[in-house]
Image: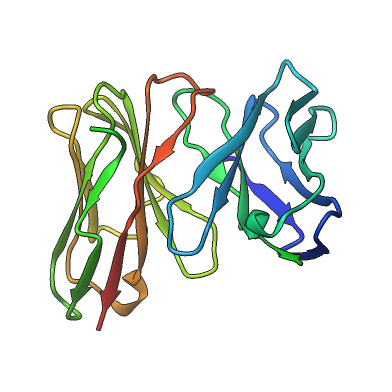
Length: 112
Length: 115
């Protein structure tokens, strides 16, 4: 089955700096890669996703890149703000008959 | 409803007690997932339904765990003879279709504490 590895497990950045979180996956059939943000005590919420026919996707300060050959994808947050502080999870999914598999998360702290 | 709803939000069970956790997915959503999230960890897959069919239950940690979705909407995760290691947040998610690349919406979870 699919295995998703996520790095780093914790990340501290100064406000205004960029943050990058990286994930690798094992199943070459995976074609959907969402990123979720989870604040303390709250539900995971989708912030951006990318599908296998696209190499990069941007949404304001957030971008995701995908390298299918290397089987890795990354989340980039620019101009970080204190409210970006949360745990971020990457995930991968191969088909409608398989589950969404998550990485172990990255705790991002943005220091004002 | 407006989103995925789970109940109860919090459950304290004595070791050995049976518990039932309920998930109300977004109306009309075909796919439903259960995940277990231990403190400081990512969601770990438990089981997956498409309508009433349980397509994958490979993540259920033991035969004490059982899930059902008899009418293809509400789902119940049952844990028999709870153990301390079952303490976690149990998250339910649903998505509109059975396709791989549709957004999964999460409920707020049920925090289970086994004492």
